[in-house]
Length: 565
Image 1 (cartoon, rainbow, N blue to C red):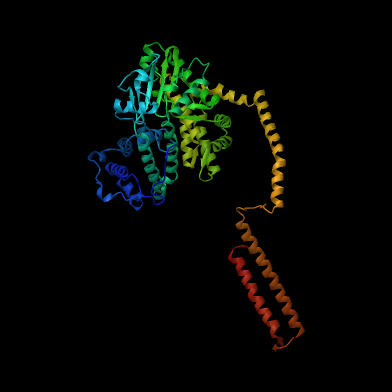
Image 2: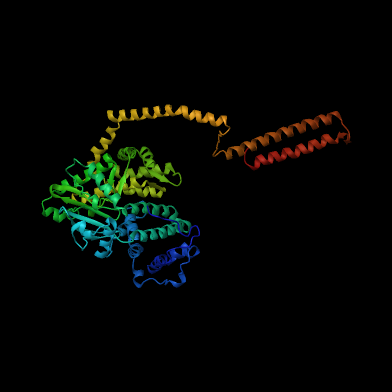
């Protein structure tokens, strides 16, 4: 796991002065000096702002704000490029305009030298590279921010793709993540409009994602799981993993020689059936989501290759998602209720999928959800745009400070990507229509004899376990009671206003009783003629009437003052 700490927040001195200063310099360079000032960075960490040039580069004034942000991510290097790429898929966090701009972020990173690659490989396997591969192409076929890919040949003559992690990339990412987390905490603290998006949570999620990408053994396990899921499915091909040549920093898989799904002209020239490709690809993504609950989290056009006979091959399994049976069924219910136009039940399903910092206004949310549904419900099923519905639903949730759970959001993004990609290759494709059998299968699975039997057996097993453990639990409680160690604590929440009201009522009743007793007692004294007297009226009785009068007016004023009779 990556080490990520909130630097500066607890008064620690910052260990990475040079990198922090470079980030601040880049923000000034692209015209974000006002943001640096609002974050009050120097109050927490001494970075010498007075020594950094605040003057933006000449061309900055001609650029849009979104373009300047993209250039900042690019200039700050691998970690920030990765963050920007992930943010480009999170339309629940940033606007569509920013998403489109950040989609242009590419890993414009020069490859490391072959000597550096060789050193990593030999360090990981503790043997010379020529003992692992009989041929190793020194020129990479792809270079990214975290690693680069070389073509090689094993001793058994099989052609493989070898992905090697860049030297010291983990330490650099850890440094950048610490800075990101600190800046995110300052954004939340000093800039109110960022508070709703919880940037610290975004950075923490990003740290979890990139931690998986830094361990190639995790990706290897994901590839093998996909292979098991689709063992008997001839519409998909999953590359083989070579475990003996795979480690945390080196991943060796079968080399795939296919055509990218985005290369439509090449596919057409080679006689591929675009309609069949789209339907096969969509079916595979729907199977991953609705049947297996384990899916490729980034099925964009660069990660899908087409092999002979229209076979689909997914690459780059660094990002995956999981949805359990309950989540799949609830998502199915949500989809059905939206298609039926039942905004109330759809809202209940959505709220099960989301997290929030405060309870939303359900009445207002349901009303706006109904408007969203009405915008699409008049269309026929084949004309429904699922990607657009999901995008508008994400925007609606953001407005009400609701956030889809990460894996659920990843699943929705995968489905939306499948529809967009499908329509690009085959304009008549409709994901909603294609998903109907899978949705129906999820519904029917609830009533299958096997499912009912499994649920019954699981419930029975839970009851048996409960009754088996109950005597021991009761014995422990009795032992604690006997030894005087048993303590029962009650914590009442929300009772303070009621207790305060009861106290006021009790005080007024007591006050009224004392007042009544004072009047009655004074009357008896006056009637008995107890001396001393004033104008033939007992002074003690007269004093009692005066005090009672004052108390009576005080009680009346108190009631009228609070507006309650």
